[in-house]
Length: 142
Image (cartoon, rainbow, N blue to C red; front, side):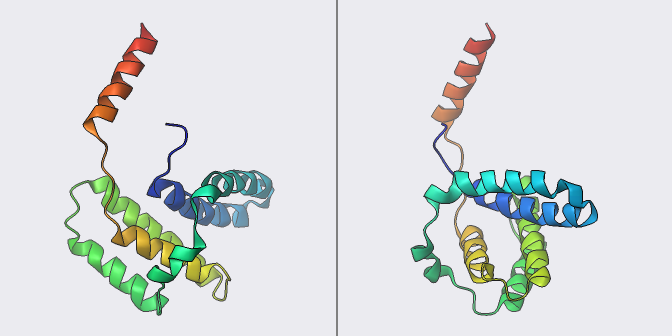
């Protein structure tokens, strides 16, 4: 359990970075804590990142990509509201960071990563895994 990764590991790093930048711009004293936390996100994720695969997901026009993805949220067909909200949060965070840093060296990689995230099926929890976790939790409480 301790050595697994999901899209939330990447997307939370992105949304955290966006929230931290906005908050720390208003309250600069928070920068050290925010940068430390973000560094922990990056360090935890680094062994799962492969820049080689990003070329398959390159986005040629970020404005069109973001506009199309945001428009698709009006009729998304996603059963879980939390998933639809998370997609919206990720897109707004990316859009905000791109607007803040137009020529950022990370822009193409983040766009490719978000493109891949939005295009990939979400891994659903497995019943056996949930049952084992529930049994472990109950056993630890007795």
